[in-house]
Length: 309
Image (cartoon, rainbow, N blue to C red):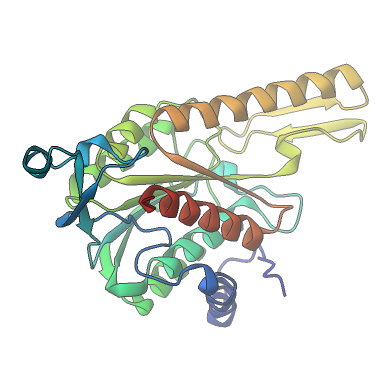
């Protein structure tokens, strides 16, 4: 069974419950054990010491224990409880677009729901900063399923974006706001299509120095290539500007595809350099499979770093 989002404002509670059921059912087998999902694993409290192995973070070397034993040791940490997850959600006008199973705004809601249900365990708290023009809002970090469902309903009821209603500066300021309220180490998730110029790189880098940062990029296939349908009117949902293009031109379609690919590559490169992990969700893809694959790979990477010979 696949959850297919609709573009109607005010999604019913039963539909959000279906999203919760699918996330928990499909991912539960991957998440056995404490904090092996999306939340940070190491924690902040010192734990047991052990010998250093290749791949360990050198910042965790215990110099006192190393001096006493003449063998390099690292100090493991105890996983924190009641961690905070902060979600920055871009609901600008560019997300009111979709040509496949759903619009990007629906996929953004799915991403928020998936992250929320995955991090709701162990009494973790979830806060959000939502960018939606004059309807933007900030929800303090709260624990509990009802708080998450309330956040999802509030995001879902947002009206469609207005041209010029949001900007990259607002994303910058949202990330800066999270940096001030997220005092303890935790997880910061950014849900956006990242179509604007990457002025968000510096605040992402600042957040990644203290928190785990996950950037979820939502895209539609028509943003990657143009169909051959003759004269096509295109509207910039951010500015309202309209242009007509002749899609019958193979050269034009090739230039468009190359420019779109270059933009996506630049976004991925900027996110990696800023220290953020990167997940891509497509409106024509299987979002459950993509999230399962990401969480599984993340868990295997952590397990590999923790294994000692």
